[in-house]
Image (tube, rainbow, N blue to C red; front, side):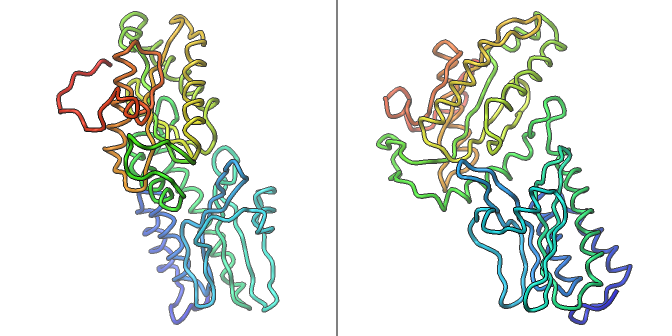
Length: 348
């Protein structure tokens, strides 16, 4: 199969690389490992994985893993997909694309297609002239990446609802916090004085009101059906770029992609109204309470979850079937910005 910078590519080295890739237990580690493996095995000038990310302003490319020789580099900021015609065509056709560059090198793009038939990522490689012997190897590793990514995603899903599960929350939260560091915000560090201007990431906790009563009255089969139908309503109510989690029992978490405070309030309120107006089979009306909070660049998951939970607790304590913002409650003097003592009673 040839040599790469003095490293002989043998069946044993390829097998060892496959073993190393399949040892990874998170998507980010998988992608980092795949890129470093291909870069070590091949004569590549550039190797990267990028994900198409839908936003209100179009689809942007997020280069999540990359390695390159001198003179080549991946974009450090997300770029609009229209600036890269090859990737745009690859996404539209869901088929591999390749193009020879003026210096004789070959740029190749493999679309990674998920179980819904959607292009969820691209494997982008740049080969030096006369490196065609590596093309089959790259294609094989792209297939391994696609298949193992499907396994990781299945493991990250709640078995009942199909939403993301709790164990994937920290990884997604860390990525959002990292992204928020690049956002321009007017917040001065004082939640009480904040006017919630600009766009931010938001975290909301959704809890089904009196869910224990549903299970006790109608049985767990109908309780599970309520959870399934509620998760389906969530998928319709929130945007594709918003992240939806089931945390267990009747509690759900939403990580909203950047938007304004008013839009965040409206989307959670709209979802509350949709649920309260939906006729659940046998059970009838079900309502939800929601507490949400802004995510800042230096926030810890426990702090954000705690503040959203306090807003949710306020909704439960004041009649349920309500949506409340932590910042707004603090600004109105209805909640303190100090964390409560441990052991406070819950109303779930």
